[in-house]
Length: 487
View 1 (tube, rainbow, N blue to C red):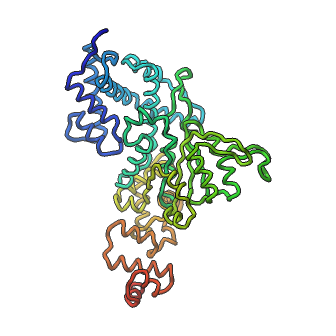
View 2 (spheres, rainbow, N blue to C red; view 1 turned 90 degrees about the vertical axis):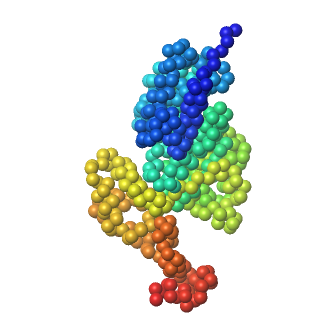
């Protein structure tokens, strides 16, 4: 038996650093610092640092190959793992453009999995490096998942702290905070981890759910030269508030012919339509009744469901993502949202920030959002249009406008400006409204008197009497009246 090779100490340390970079969250601060170390640079843009880091990895791999020491079969244990991470890191980034083109093509083609023309070349390269055939296929599928996750999460634009935190949270939701453990043990078990998205209406909870649902692991079918499933089928979404109580169970679980009046055929609910590597997104989960919560709790606990009018237990293999803009704390206190259902649903809870919070943290995010929305509306944005739309909004909207409809409202505001040249805001979002009070608080620009004035006026608008405002604020009635009347 031949003796295995050993990496030099400097090579081992270098590839350990590569491994750390490969498994770090690309939306976090740590990744840029690691790329800087790999590149041996003190500064530069993220793109420049990554390109320099990749060149360092390629140089190190070339030196090993030239010495006849670049094959995994020569190594064992930790050295094999270290070198494997370096080789995978280099190959993944070499094919980034090919994966991006595949994602765009699949979005265009729809639900039939696309052919992957570069699969043979990449799989051959991995095998030549010493990866076993099963390993090569697994890492190829992992590469595709990594790139899809980055692609869809990166569409949540903006550089505010809350959006950066959201992107990091979504990445961790897909791969966990420890990608090594995910890749080794959890990649085929993520259906056990449900997710609850919280946030005001219009903040983009659907986009966040899509980023999770479209980024699941999909095996590669080498014989067909395609992935086993199209990611466009991986997520099935439904808004539960749109259905009357009598139809929600049928929409979720399906029904058998004759189960109720009007059930003239068998119907497959969204649980039944979910593909093996997919997820379902239940929007407005806070609106469902307790009986429906109990049936969904069974899905989460036992991973089975029963169609309406049937006694058959059908297994469910998908992941459940739910969202609400309502206060679950209030619903739970009132007995309208079961605690046991909540605890089964909240493997991960992710807050989607409001637009006013984003803009208070980073006013420049408005330009990034406008550019993104205009591209979606027009496909091609002419120079100066973003600045023109921004100037129109800032001119016509009240100072520190609270954007009660969040990003959804901003998109319609852009359409209104394109049509009519102006947008003056939601007439219900007046200066004493709750949203505007929150916007001012978020901005950190109110003194104590301004805060009390707005809060007292808001309470008076809601409850109608000075006495009730005084009771709630524990202020003297005359003081309350002074704040409300502005005397």
